[in-house]
Image (cartoon, rainbow, N blue to C red; front, side, top):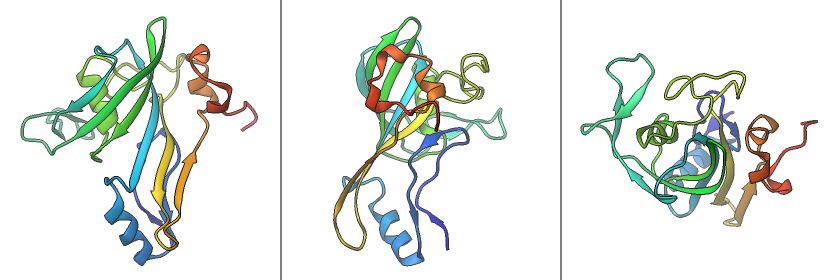
Amino acid sequence: MFHPVHRLDKGTTGLMVVAKSGYIHDRLRYALHTERFCREYRAVCIGCPDPKSGTIDAPIGRDPNSVVGRCVRPDGARAVTHYEVLGRSNSLSLLRLRPETGRTHQLRVHMASIGCPLAGDWLYGEEDPDLIPRPALHAYALDLDHPVTGEHLSLTAPIPADMARLAPELLTETECASEEI
């Protein structure tokens, strides 16, 4: 049976944890959003956050003007994202994003709320299929303890070619997927 432990927004690439049984799913969900289960993303945003690293602690709720959208709002659920600018090229910045909580569209909403929407994000920024046909967001790394053996797992997935093309000078060779994938 397929038991997704967490979700990725449509168009987001990268790593996702799936359990093969309900029992293991429960154990992993309990660890989610703790120091025993850390997720790290890479994103390309328009502009550059100021300061270059920090924490966005802004509650997120439904956008009353959208069927699917979310927004920062005082009556929303607690949402915390840690960010760091890894590099900048022209009008784009490569970011490391670490969600502390797991709200729908959290990373996209938080970056848009500070004036730096993700490249290609049609919902919270501007759609630009010539730049990238999806939000430039990639689930890059997972650190977690195996729910049965207790072994610590550190996993990474290379940044896909469509994101790498946005700012190739900012990425190391080991961070990028080859064109053949």
